Structures are given as C-alpha cells and as structure tokens.
Image 1 (cartoon, rainbow, N blue to C red):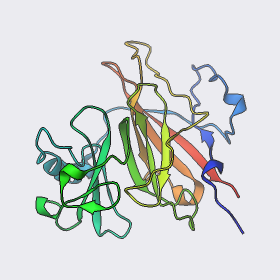
Image 2: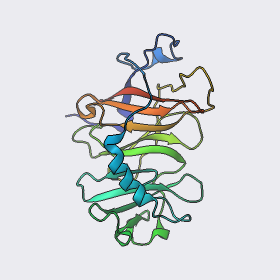
Image 3: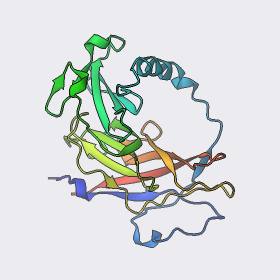
Length: 244
C-alpha cells in the first residue's frame, strides 16, 4: 500500500541545458533525472486565451479601488465545475491574498459572490480573511501530481513578495486551503539569461500544467520573467516524484 507524504514529494528534474552556461552551483547534490532544453519564449501568441482573459478582466475591473481585486492574482474553476474561485490581493499593499467564489454560470453577478472568512463562506466582502500571505505572483491549479488517490487536489506555484527569486510550492485539499506551508522548491536555481540590463530579481513565476502530462509523468512546466526592461520569459520543465 502506497502512503503519499507531502515532505516526500520532491523535485526530480530541472531542464537547464544551455551550452554557454556554466553548471549551476549545487546541481550535483540534487536529484535531477536528466537535462533538456531551457527555452526563451518571445512573442508568444496567446490568442487561444484571449476570450477567457477578456472575461476575467471584465470581472476584475468591476472591483473598487478600496476592494480586493478578486481574480487579478489568479482564478481557478473548481474540480466539480460548480464554482469559480477568484484570488486577489488586499488593497493595503501587504500582498495578502483573499478569496471569493461565485457559481460558474453567474460570474458577472456581484450579488452571487461569497467570500472566505477563515471558517466558511460569507456574503460580506469585509469579512474576507487571507488564504495566502506575502505572495506576489502565482497560480493555483487542480492536479493529481500528489497521487491519484491523494486528497490534495490543488497546488500552488508562485513567488513571494520579498524578491528572493525563488519558486514557492504548496498544496491544499480545497481551493480555500488550509494551505500547508509554502515550501521553496529546493535545488531549482533561477537566473536571467540576458547578458544586458540585468535585473536585481526574477519574478512572475507561473505553472503551466496544460503543457505536459503532469498526471502521468509528474512533468510540470513553469515560467518566469527575467526582469529588466528587455527581459524575456524563460520556461523550465520540472519532474516531481511522489514516493511511499
């Protein structure tokens, strides 16, 4: 019988094969299975997502200046597709993330929104309590990366608000959490490939579970911005393994 453990879910592969780059410090101590190409993505055509993005913008633009911008941090459709869950920063600039939900067929009706108050769902926005703290960017998504029979069906990939250029990874059984401690993805070193206009930190970390078969192989593509005025988007393929 397999027993899945959060602490035992670990990074197994980093895609960092670029001839002109020197080996990353500490790579020999990491459990990497293989190397493959790191990609620099320029001029990507996101037309497939244009309509969905426009609808999310219509929702996020409806919030007032002194209200959380629910959906601006990220949004996810629940596993049973009954609700859309919209995450947004509080307006105090503390980078706390609060959560609203709305029936998936009534996303444009403000009166149908409910807000997570730390114990349950409330119709009063002012009772919202953070589900994440000190997070700058990221995405919550549902996944079987922790095992098909695992109760943990939601994962988070992102970065904190301290500009430490590190990938953060967490999991939860429900969209509202409770989110277990958001861990640094140990062994994954992030850096800029551009030889000019270096930025002081790297940001905009996002997962792309649609790109590879996460359920079958544990392969997950993530991207980040190099920063600076001329930075590109770097994509990297990770492999996670859940052990007994």
